[in-house]
Amino acid sequence: MNRRVKMDLFEACEKRYSYRGAYQDKPVPQEDLERIVSAGLAAPSGCNAQTTTFVIVSDPGLLVEMRKIHSMKAVQDAKAIIACVTAKKPVPVYEDQNFEAEDCAAAIENMLLAISALGYASVWIQGHLSKEGRAEKINALLGIPAERTVRVILPVGVPAGEGERRPKKPFGARAWFNRHG
Amino acid sequence: MNRRVKMDLFEACEKRYSYRGAYQDKPVPQEDLERIVSAGLAAPSGCNAQTTTFVIVSDPGLLVEMRKIHSMKAVQDAKAIIACVTAKKPVPVYEDQNFEAEDCAAAIENMLLAISALGYASVWIQGHLSKEGRAEKINALLGIPAERTVRVILPVGVPAGEGERRPKKPFGARAWFNRHG
Image 1 (tube, each protein chain N blue to C red):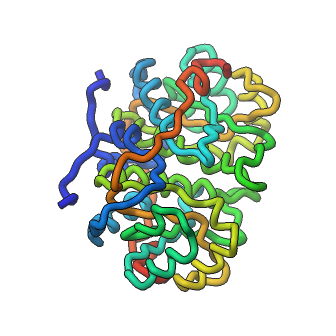
Image 2: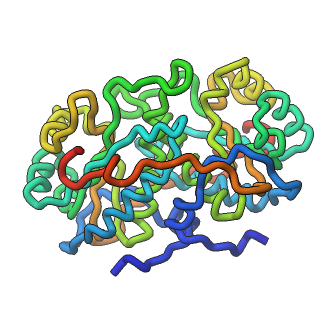
């Protein structure tokens, strides 16, 4: 159904927000998940190293196990969860620098926009994974290699309603022409 | 001219690539720069902290000074350069974690997509800024406060031609359903 949906880039940027609420009991077709993750794969990465890998959790049994790991409503209701995976000890790609945080974030942003464009909603879950052994549990559940770890999860589903949109600072509070404000 | 341009989100993701070449001698209207940076401001940030700030360099005299700092052709030709600024010592926003790298990267990705959608091209310049005192020079030039620093610059212009597109790994090499490959 969503295959031919088109959404203007600027509209997608405005529409996207962090949704933590309930999802409708509607499936997310595999084709849509492939489109979403393909958008992530198209994101830039430092020195084109393409360091982030992805596990798309759509198996009902695995989703039951994922629900035991995080209590957020969106995780409980998700029809799919995209796990974004990076190295535990990133290898430098330019001098002594690595860009795995940036690589992963850019891919996530593409995926969040794609999720919005296709009529779904999601939220970037990262900090919470370091608590209560969540990352370790997900790593074991999804067969993530020992040298890598889940960094972020994105639940995906059709939102049951409009969630809270947190306020954004206006342009002039964060952006200026020619001199920092 | 570009005000009413629309581009599908997925098309923008596919069209965007890192452009390091020459730009045409065509201006980038202030209105377009505001749209691009507004897309960046709409990106998510950890705990909604909105940590990245932006200086849009469009003043011809300042662009002359920017050219002295980085020799890349895109910087030499740019009609505008967006400087993305973060804290030198980020403040934790969740437990002991901060997400300034992620916040900045997500905003950049929105801006890179917006740049592509409006018919411009850009490249994410980050690692190079730590060399040859470039970040310090840009911080001084743009009046960036002492506790903050330019993290990334994005040149903006109408590309003179098609640049090299670096190859991307296929879906099955980076993404899998239900179990890490």
